[in-house]
Length: 594
Image 1 (cartoon, helix red, strand yellow):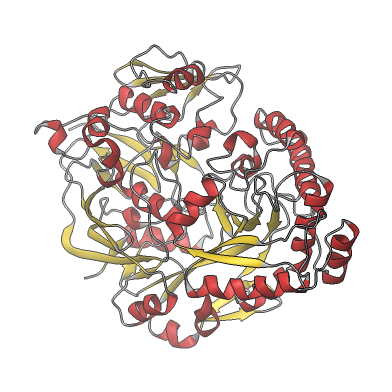
Image 2: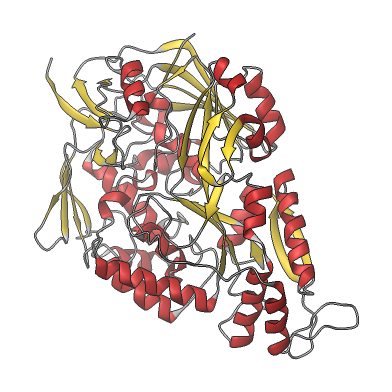
């Protein structure tokens, strides 16, 4: 038996080349999401709910220490952090040996080891037009030779066997990545679920159905998937032997409790995970209160005041009410590295464009909406205003910037009057050339979505603009944003990695069709973004971020929203569950008392 040290996700752990002791199959964790997943192919999905499941099935090269605060990158399937050349254009990774994919009929009964070719294939899939990856921006424009392969594939098939200097395997366990320009965010990118290694024979066997057949090297495998209803994961018998050995930051009480509960146990401890989807908050809360759910991803908004004692003057201060503390209920609460926002479709014939009259229309709409009121009434003070593209807790945030158009309905009406949006006999405004205006507002079909519509109806009525709300499911909402087929919509973005580049890229024009949901094409913004992308965190990069925020304020592709707190609740029997700043769920680091 050969033993050596390994840094893994939440810990410095022990890797022993022996069979893993299977977790108790009767240990079942009942969890919940408040929106439906979209699938489990890492290259094809981008929502947080799918990612939460994927994190437990697939393993990228790098990951995050579970208890380190602030978030810290560590190796996962790689032996160590990358070797980086002096010019920062070449990254070399050496894979651990003896990591195996979960069993699948595609492998014909043979154990399938993870190799460098699987890392290369997983990255190239993001660039393949046939994959249709919403995360193609992670590789396109960065790696030598990849854009050329993608361009050729537009009129045929992507040639995965063609030599590619930018992404290649040097030998069975060594991967080399060569960049066109410095890409400071690359190490973070290689910890994202999107960039996970994948077995080529699996993808070729399941084709378009790859979302339902994920095969990875992680601690769990997909047992059952009823889209939008339920997902079940079970232990992967091929998972290697890992012993939890957490080393929290001194004084971090939550991390110290995780270490106390979990150190010395093997990963994973839970034999089965059942995730139920709740699109309405009340049934989810009742299931938790009755003990049918072991954890809540986050407390439903309408129930926050009944569960937490909150300080209205300081939203960062909140505590469980006495009745829940007495019942042994536990909470993990953090200000998420996220933002909510209201994109205007910049390609929409009514709202889009960079002409002064179109900017005036969007600016007036922004000034008509009272964000402070919705933070109070809908968010229940469980959020703070978004004042910068990069949120608090993320590298590059500027706490002194104010990304705010100001709530001012009289000024909004005066602005529309000035630019020729006249009020007609029916009480609604027309365009400067006399055409009727109707705003196509895509909205969430849930009860909370209907509540938001009421506040928006009031805002738009106050400036005499007609609106048509179009309620859709979460999946359809994502499709409409990526295809630029809407007028206005509510959106949210949570950090894939804790660096500002992950947020400023949301407005880059080449990300239209993926994460640029405002379909925003601004030459001024693009120029600043491309300059910033080559820089490490520095005052010079922060200056560019400030300039990008100013451009966005001037051209108004969004109305900024807020940054929310996540309040995860756990039953007394749950151990090791802590909200991580980047990782979406904690299942592989947890235990549950039967």
